[in-house]
Amino acid sequence: MAFSTSFSRPIVPFNTKSFQPFSPSLCFLKPPDQNVPLMSYKRSCGCMGIHCSSSEVRPPSDPMNGRQHQIPHMAPFNMTMREVALSQSQSSYKWRRVLLKVSGEALAGDQEQNIDPKVTMAIAREVAAVTRLGIEVAIVVGGGNIFRGASWAGSSGLDRSSADYIGMLATVMNAIFLQATMESIGIPTRVQTAFRMSEVAEPYIRRRAIRHLEKGRVVIFAAGTGNPFFTTDTAAALRCAEINAEVMLKATNVDGVYSDNPKHNPNATLLETITYQDVMSRELSVMDMTAITLCHENKIPVVVFNLNEPGNISKAIIGERVGTLIGGM
Image 1 (tube, rainbow, N blue to C red):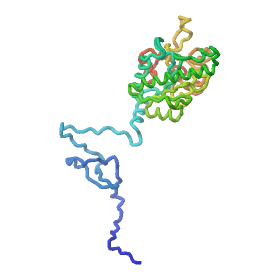
Image 2: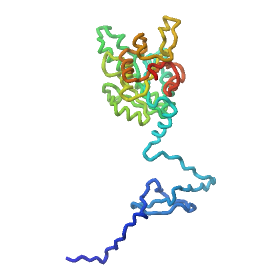
Image 3: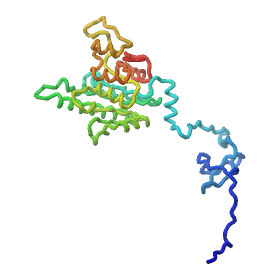
């Protein structure tokens, strides 16, 4: 069978030197200004785009005010704007990813009620100030302002395990309240609980928590470790190690770690720095031994400071001297 070739097109040899790949970044939706000689039309990949014949594009002038449009500085194609902010902030601030431990007693404020809205709003505003700098913040909340399991164990036949579970539920209440406060001022926030409460919060998943932090969201960890006989300080040390946070910030009602109990010894002095071994050997009531041991083994510095002092949270997060530094280099 013979085929007709009268309608076939001649084969044109491909010139690799004159071929220029299509650049999506140079494709505009409308034709360029006729006054700009550096632009020319070129059909590529099936769409009408604008191809620049020079490495520099001259922006068109504004006919209304005669000013030249400024081309904004763009990040490299493989970096997001948040990654650029993180790289810039990393050179300016001491920490890039921090874990803030807020005790339940600190949330109570003047203790006229379980949760003081002024305290939660102060926390939210200071956290908002540092997250806009590109610093990633995770929070662990306590529940002592509502229910402390260790104090109620044995009351009316309540065993320690059940009392601790009730205390975990109290931390969830604080976390949801703090989340609502943060989102009211525009901070994207996620609450993750150690045991499933799908109707009110996400379950704790380590990779998901890290992804939230990378996207600029504040993650609040609630329900402790999910196990009785462990404090929220231990949960904070555990989560700090799991998400690779660089420091644990413990916000309390005192200015830091003292050489002795200042309530009993008026001559007690505030310690600016102290080692993990000193905290354990002198049995200083900073946090429980399980938590301080976790921080010691994972080389996590701990900053203890007063939550009620305005500006202390932001100062601690960006690495300024505040309170007491435990295990710092």
